[in-house]
Each structure stands twice: as structure tokens, then as C-alpha cells.
Image (cartoon, rainbow, N blue to C red; front, side):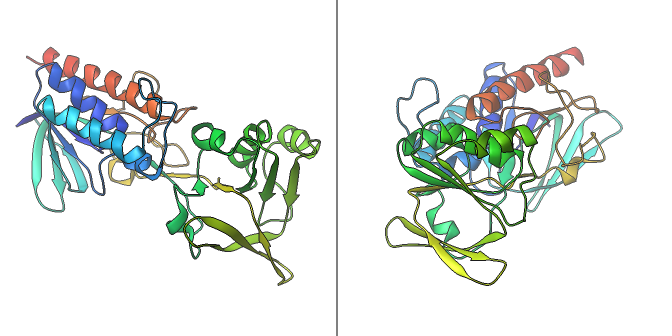
Length: 303
């Protein structure tokens, strides 16, 4: 019987593991893909405390190393089901094994939706980004494109328009779907161009991104040549396996506030998979600390 099983090995999950281990708890982190989560797609991070510049992969490695050094077990396994037993403990079944724990922390994160077009995967982290707050500064004074027309895309475009030479918004519909105030503010800027009725066909380049191939609804194709592209078509949390234990909002995020508590006693949530306004590495790490300490207090209260 473990004290805490953490489902998800991104910044939230790994920080939770470090805090829980330091509180003397036995901890297992389950990660289905790769430790570090979305940060591994960032080739350069400059807004994480203590690191002037660090790659996402390097930061992920340091977080894993720190959690293991404190005593955490880590396994590359996907949690497929969660059950709460009559004695109040939990059973977690994975694709390889199953584990029992006194408390569980959900830290599955949220993935940026991708376009799924030719060349996209090759340039993620090398010309294609998903976060203007994280990566916008790398394109200061340059030309960039934002793919999407909703609020998230318009907010990204607004941030980029402050520092970039030109921002081109590419939207597949005949209108932008974001708030009118955002649309009006962007439309009034001289360095913002809005292209409607257009989809991205592919991304081209040799060692770096060189062109974005666009296709209009009339069938014509053109090429755009920005230095960077920000894909902002939404996020997708992965909380389906836990919906029987906690409320999810209409987008699939666990409904929880800064206390990281769920509807089920002994079940906690941390990071991008919960309802929140700001999704950054630092806020995920903060959730990790809060959820771990809450889980430790819960376990201690049952003694």
C-alpha cells in the first residue's frame, strides 16, 4: 500500500512527488508518455525561476531527478481506471499493473490541440509554439502567425502584436469567434493582418520553419513566411477516467480551485488539468506543492 499515487509526470506531478516525499510519504508517479509533459516541446525556457535559459527537456530531467532523489518511484505506465475501495483507499489499474494508495493526485495536464497537418510535428518547438507568454519574446521584432480565431488565439495575437513587427491571424471560418473587444483592438493595429476562410495545409522547411502553406475556401493556395507560428486552437485535458469521482466542466477540466480539492475525499488535482485561468510551469508547480501537502494532511488525519 502506497501513501500517494500521482497520475501524471509533468511539472505538477513531479513537484507534488518531491513535496510528498519530503513529508515522509511513499510516492509513485505514473506517466503514460514522457516525463515533463508539454514542457519537453519547448527548446528554450526563460521564465522559470532560477534558470536564465534552459531547454524543456533539461528542466524535465532535473525535475525527475529531484523527485527520485527524494525517494519517489516513477513508472512509464498509463492509468486506465481508478476505484475507491470500501476502506477509503484507492486502486489504480494501469496498462501493466495495479497499485493501491491511501490518496491519489490527478496531474494529467492538458495537451495543446494540433492541426494534424504535414510538417507540423517536425517544427513543434522549432518554429511552431503554443504559448506567447512562454515563447513570444524569442520573436521580438519579427513576423509571426497565429492560427485560430477564438479568445485564446486573439489574446496570443494581442501579446505578440506588442513586440512583433507583424502578426498574421489565420482563421478557418469567415469570422473571428473571440470577444468583439479583442477583435476591435486587433483590427485597429497597423501590424496585425487577419486572414479568414483559410486553413493551414502544411509547414515547410529544411532545418527550420520556412513557410506555411495556406488554402482558401475558394481552393487557392498561398504561402506565408513568418519566423514563428503560434497554434492557438484550444487545449484538451485527459480526465475521462476520473469523471465518476469528480465534477468536470464542459471542456473536460476537473472543477477545482487553488486548494486542489476534488469532490472525492482523498482525491486531489494539480496543474493544467483543473479549472484555472493561468496555465504556466510555475502555476503547475505551485499546484503540485498545494496538492501534495493537502494529500499528506489527509493521510495524517486518518491515523
